[in-house]
Image (tube, rainbow, N blue to C red; front, side, top):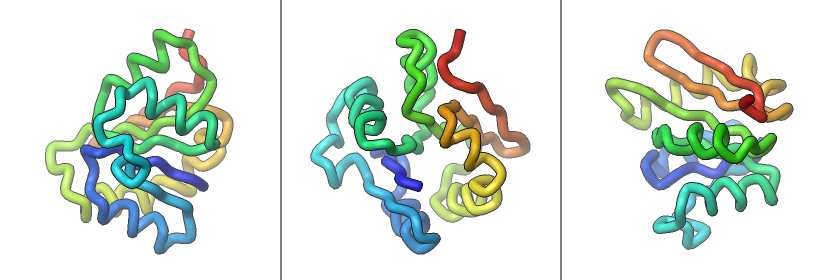
Length: 121
């Protein structure tokens, strides 16, 4: 899978995903550190990437614009350390892979995972 990691998450998550064999870039590597969320979504969609973020605005934009892609993983955690984020990603990716490929918003919280297929109606 190909991932675009939003600026609010650690570069360690990029390296972690790469170590699992995925393509992963941080928004800052694409000179998108100051880009608007909508621009990040459009870039990810046109490059068949999945956005990983801790910014809830991405879900709102997808819902409002009725986009079918890109998929977005949103973390809502009390302790968003890179180690914790990476641990949760490691355990969740295999079970959400098909949903991400179809187009979904996946919200990963401390004790649950919620999924909404795109477009949100």
